[in-house]
Amino acid sequence: MNAITTPFGFSSTAAEVAEEIDLTGRRAVVTGASSGLGAETARALSATGAEVTLAVRDMAAGERVAKDITASTGNQEVHVAHLDLADPASIAAFTAAWRGPLHVLVNNAGVMACPEQYTDQGREWQFATNHLGHFALATGLHDALAADGNARVVVVSSTGHQQSPVVWDDIDFAFRPYDPWLAYGQSKTANVLFAVEATRRWADDNITANALMPGAIYTNLQRHTGGRGSGRVPADLIKTVEQGAATSVLLATSPPLDGVATLSQDLVTGRC
Image (cartoon, rainbow, N blue to C red; front, side, top):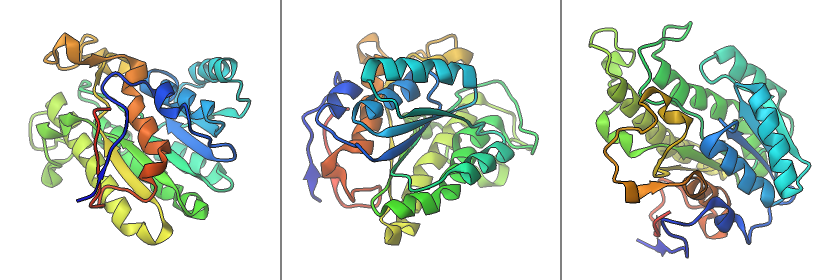
């Protein structure tokens, strides 16, 4: 097993990770970029010179973030597009509207431990948003990713995957009592499995996919849990939003990670 080391650690920020990176002429999409980790990931990618599209459900919030990113980075190529990951029609519209190659797709958006809720198609809300929506987005953008010849897919998962495997016989809790943490856990397991299988199936297209755990960060993701997630993480292990976005940016930009993906025998070390 070949180790890939980085100079970054627990306290590294997304801006520090991206500092020496030049992605001028490259294009990136970040889901859930109207706040939290998505906004900071988009900011760091914009600072590299990349053209960045904020794929968001709340267009007004997305426009405010895009304006702020342009002001802080000087990058005029920051765009906002509507995307509701729980709505197949919205995903289809987004992918159909995309033109040209795509170099980086960051599947960042998510919901956590929300009350029992289902999409119009009858799918459990967390699985639909966290996994199925991103699955449809990535596969819908496959040709754009393949056109780059060296594209990366970054999947924000969580150690919450330890809560549950994907319960294939009852993904939508039709036969078992709904548990928000089990629902979240199986959606995060699905995120990891997607990265593994995307890497395998898209190897000939030179598309690499990696899943990551960003750490414990207090964002809007915790709005259904009183703002403190599981409540079990010690205070000294809580990251800032800027620190939490660092691993996504590392996987999206770091030159030593060219061609390194979930199925690779390489190991990325460091504590981002």
